[in-house]
Length: 290
Image (cartoon, rainbow, N blue to C red; front, side, top):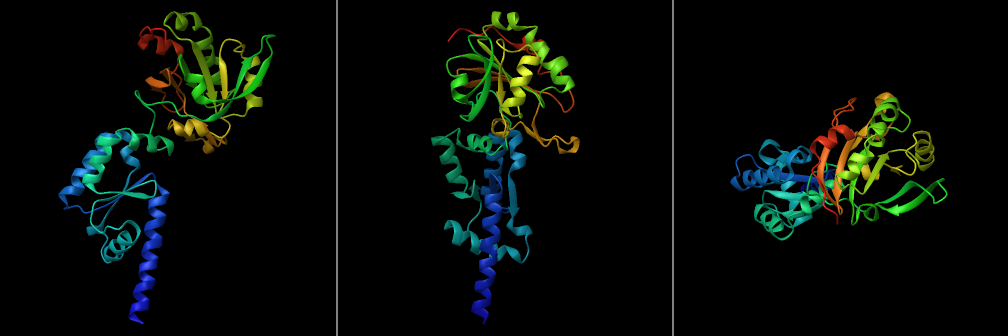
């Protein structure tokens, strides 16, 4: 009976650990007094920056009677019961020495995985993600047309400014944000910008109508991020349910040079300032042609 009870408890512990490590980009099982754990957490904080806040840490020496079952579950799931035990997207990558080895061999892997999970905000040096999207652009006849593209195609071999808005047709987006780019196209081109893109978590029909109404058609390519996947991968998806808008993009501007991010500006909620073209031009150094 005792053996059956322990087996049942172990199954419960395994199920709990499995749920936790698959629910977040990264989970660390640690002990507050373990020097290797302290070193691993210091490395992760340095490498991930603000995204470190998304790391879930369980300190076994603060878990009381549950610690023993958790250790047994970790052994069953990862083959090691020692700490730190670091899980990245549901898979154990080992402890402190394995983390150091991973960073030595694949220095961008942690940040890339966090970006994929939407847990990190894009920053200078990151590569733009490859995602299937719909864009609105002008045909040779000047009509608005929707086309399916891979986002990598949009940024490859070009100097690009991508700005994001919470909602097409909204007052701030239509009256201030979009016009700031339309009115500064010549200045942006003189700085070496090849293309300007505007994205929103709206469907292609809405973005097509907005392209015509805003007079952006033929000047700015509009990106319909209908499912919010690009915004999520950039760490710029936000919950606007309080205003009845569901998931939306933050207001931002990103400068991309041949798929590589060189500048990021993200506005505070309800603000339209640092991501406008006027603000961007103050910081934008001339870009050499690719």
